[in-house]
Length: 384
Length: 128
Image (cartoon, rainbow over all chains, first blue to last red; front, side, top):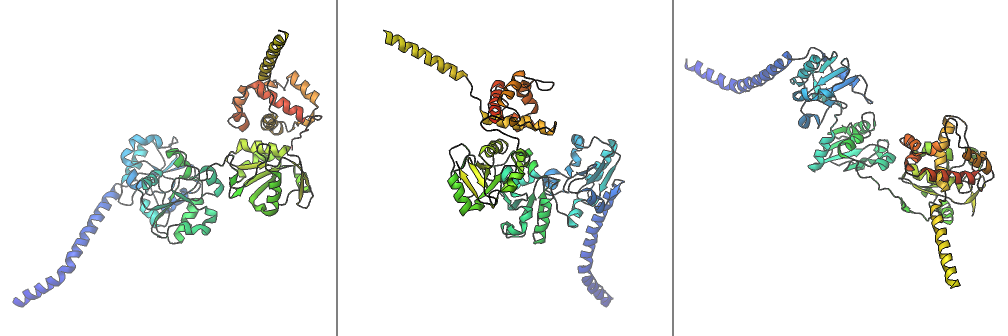
């Protein structure tokens, strides 16, 4: 008996460290399994998977579908959601039905925080009760979206919160320079255009765990998702996009400061000190001649005569925009160069100056108010 | 006495001249040029495919055309009116910028420009 008891004791002592945690583990798993079971019992009848959602959450967004995030706004949606989704928290369903589409046959895809979350299923049922006929639930939700390697989107309000809290983050504007110069950036953003991403990776924070948020022109713009992917390949672990981009920020918080203040009337631009001429808007002819000889790269010379005249002979390096085409092409002119319009007598170039001033006040423009003879070999001579 | 009267007369004449000079508006041909290309030729190339260049007519022909004030179903003046400018200003930068210019002034601007750019003007102007 004594030996049996002792062995029993030893057996128990040996078993306990295994049994107890095992019991606890099964308790936890049991609880999880129970809550999952409870959730599953409440699942909506039409479920979809990741591949289904992925084909609908595209850039640019597809029409005929609305992706709805049923999670709480501040805690869940704002810091990360499927790009393109709108937020209708389940507990606000009744107050926000105006956000649902007019077309009751439109595909609605609800999602929330994963298999144990019932918010999306509840909302889906309510939508069906309102008469929506094409409602689905992406049961594995946002956690699976992230686990599958997709990049989440943040809301403008989340970025504002980071700014106000002076949190550690990097906000990156992925648009081209001419857009940024024209429209300005979101405050605190740094500029790394997607096309020149590889050249400017030194601007990214050294700590690869820093939260990076890329943005560009909105849901149809692929630049920020492209850059975000490149950042991830570099090893950054916390990368998101602000999918609604710059236009959304302006709607929420107003126009930001210009990245480069408009240099109206200033004669110093990009390190070039321009000497102006007698006529308003004109450039000094001697300064122009000297600069073409010694530092031609400082200027963008635009010959506004017609194609035939241009082909017969122009200033070396000049581009041709006939005066009649100027209005059409003005959007493409760079704001960061000194632009000089030239023609044959100073008449058309003067009109080009007046026209450009009317249409694009942000440009640094001058015109050559002089009679110009073009030799045909790229050289020219000015008579006044 | 005579000197004083003469001086007074001179003063009156000068001030009368000054007043009439103040009322006379010197057309701004540069503004006329912009309005002409951005508003007039914009239609004439897009809709009618027939550019109308200043140097298509002589000064006398332009003066006669403007005096007759006929433009298809409308008048020429119609295209300088504030109503017309308001109706196109959402898509036309020149119409927007000059939205508040008195109609007569804008017409004078273009008259001066056409006079200058006519076949026999100071600086005959084509479209290109």
